[in-house]
Length: 230
Image (tube, rainbow, N blue to C red; front, side, top):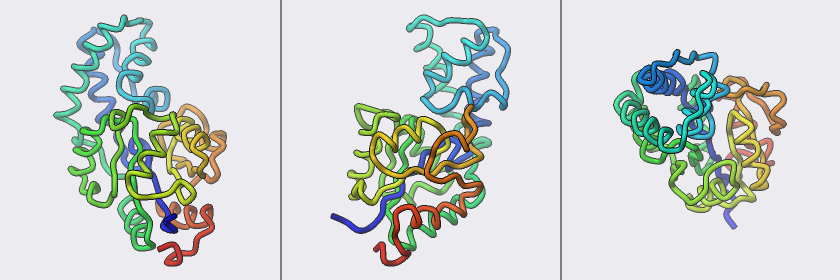
């Protein structure tokens, strides 16, 4: 068993503020359907379970129920637009790079565990200069399951060479908390992410207001002391 911790990060709303580009792509699709655009205030209700669910929820908000074939058609249009504009306005949340570097310096393995498709996750992180900091990036289609299925997190940790007894998830929503609980590991919630539930009500083990607070919270919850974790 490795003694090194593995720290898994959700992507959208946790590590990177992707809302502007997600909403931009979504409103492109809404416009093609002659529907009123959604706003940034709707992000918490839309983001977290992948693009298909986001599209379904947005259309439902406008009183439109889409059959499966129409969902897929709109998803294709969304992804085509998003691929071209994936990092127009998206940026790491304050303290992201510093937190990742601090965790790495203390011997932690780093993984991404997101419901964004893998190719888009890798592309975004590369464009933002973050991809090289991670041992493994798991997207919604990397495995046969995705969050909140615990297998998504477990396989991401194991693929990176980690052990679930020394793993923790950082996220922003009830999907992340449910994933961590089912996988049997601690979970830290950020207070600035995309959720329609108050962060204090997510029942995470810890809530942080800034990514700079993640490293000390990780080592506190895993009961590890800095370089002793290597």
